[in-house]
Structure formats: structure tokens, C-alpha cells
Image 1 (cartoon, rainbow, N blue to C red):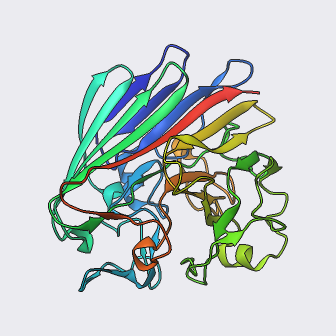
Image 2: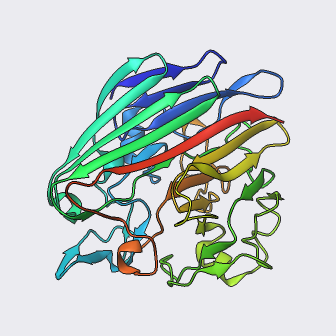
Length: 336
């Protein structure tokens, strides 16, 4: 495993490995200027390989999130995927992009380019897919992640990033006190397998309404049926202006009152998955041997919707030869 460092002039530093394109650490100053690592992960490759939590900090593909019954069709042909999440496929299968070695080119002290070619049939997906991911730490305190892809046969693509964040800089502390805002009037309810039902539901008068800033933990144990299914928040929000305005826009904002750190998320994607660390249980020991207890990290994954290949009313994830896939996710940091 190789480790690369990018850093801007304001003291923000990211360490990224070629294994899964993972952000292993991300140091961000608090309101007093003290810099701490705000992402979960491990100190060595063997821990990543043996972990119960496979996705810390990784590039996710070919298909981020879940595909129902681990299958989809393009035209008259059905493709079968690995069932690695109950009866469903999750995050591209066990051999997905989180679990491969990327070719890395350090372009300058602030920029890394990662390249991977996913062969036709890999994890069940059709087409040779050429992927390029660029990590850049800008002088505006942004960790900017750009995804580019082309294919030689029709395929589906949904790339995302899977850092587990704790803005306190202490992974033993809950994230339920973080204040979250999501720019979305709708979300996609799920079934018992966390596969979208196909409904696009209003967040109004539900615990999924984050249009105004709300502590993450304020309503998580209210007993709402959707929260029971996800053991908390593990859902896709339909971002405002999706399908109309494809420009980069604010998707979410998270603030930690204790440290004063603020993270804004910008994207051109139609959706964002908010996961509240529901399946963390203290069994994983990360960097410096620290255990990661329940709900001590959150993920905000910009994306197309889960199970889109099987839902005609969802934005399409189909990529054809001659087309260029482009997605961008920006994590911008500031203080209160």
C-alpha cells in the first residue's frame, strides 16, 4: 500500500492510499486553529483487509449504494451481480473499487490523479470502464473529488466517496450533537432490505426534514418506521433542483458546536446518502487502536439514487459508448 499526501496553505492535509483510493486521514483546524484528523480509518493495510467495515474513506464503484436483488437489465439482457448485502448488491460487490489498487499520479502538492480500468464482466458489470478520479485540496479549503469515466459497451455507473466523518476530531464521541442541514424536500423511502420502494416522498413533518439545521440525534430514535428499517438514518435524499439544474450546488451542511468545524457538501448529483453510523458497534478498532462506537461517524455520499437501474422514475445511471461520465463532490471546511 502506498500513501500520498496533499496539503493546502491553510493547514488542511489529506493522506490518501492507492488501495481503494481511500482518504486515510484528513486534518482540519478547529475554531482555535488546532488541527485534528476528522475521518475514521486504520493505520495499516492488514486492518483494512480484515475489517468488518469495508468502506472507510474509499472510492465506491462501479455502483455506489444498493441494487435490488443484485441484478439489472440493459435492453433485453439481464446482468447478475454478487449478493453481498442480503439479497442485494452493495457498493459494486466485494471486489468493487474500494478493494482494488489504483494507479496514482501526484500532479502537485495539492492534487492526486487516480486511474483504474474495470474490465468487462468485473463483478458482473458489462463493458470495459476507464475511470479517473482527481482529489484536490484547494486554497478555499475544499477537498474536491472529480470522477470521470468512459465505456466501450453500455453499462451503469454511480461513483461516490465513503469517508466516515466526525467533526470533533475524536472518534469516540457521538455525532448526534452535530447540526445537519440537507437541501432536499424529498427522500426515497426503503423496504426491509434498504432498497427504495420507488416512492419519492416529502420530508415535511417527518424526521427526514433537514431543510432547517437540526441536531442529527434529535429525532433518530422517534420510532418512525423508516428509521426502524435503517436502524437510524441510512437513506437517500432527493436534492433540490435535481433533474433541472445540473450545476454544482450546496447539498448539505454539518456543524459541530464543540470544535466549531463546519463542513459543506457541494455536488452536481441528484441525490445524497446520509448515513449516521448505525452499524458501528465498537468492534472495530481504528487508528491508534481506538474503538469506533455506535453513531460516532456520519457519511454524506453524493450519488444517483439507489437501485436506479431498476426504477424508471429515477434519474438514469446508464452510460453508453461515446458518452463521458462526470461527477463532482466537494467537501468545504470552515469554522463557526
